[in-house]
Image (tube, rainbow, N blue to C red; front, side):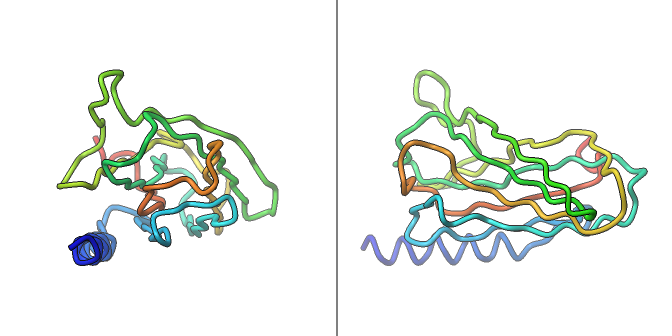
Length: 159
């Protein structure tokens, strides 16, 4: 029973990740093997920016099961710019209210989030930017994380 439910959830996740929004430069999810996100499993996404004069929203796409045991998550973000300079920072995101109610959109046992990295951000130059996302919690592996990815869209697309 559990295995068939897991297969159905993974299939739905793949279908959802295949549905690209035409207003987004990137909208990707990478499945996390066995729902255990280790420090070694960095999710890497390339973003090709053609127009640096336009502001963009940059989000982390995250999915977890209802069995995720924390109300927050820390993520290390490594941004590699076209000139090979690196910007490294850590962000905390709240995933649940103090009463335990999940803040993400839910479907059955799965909750989805778009967690902001940047809002109205202008990339400094044209070219390909690489974003590496790494879980930065005390638990390794971090259990019940099913998918992690990135979404980059023009700022006017979410207004």
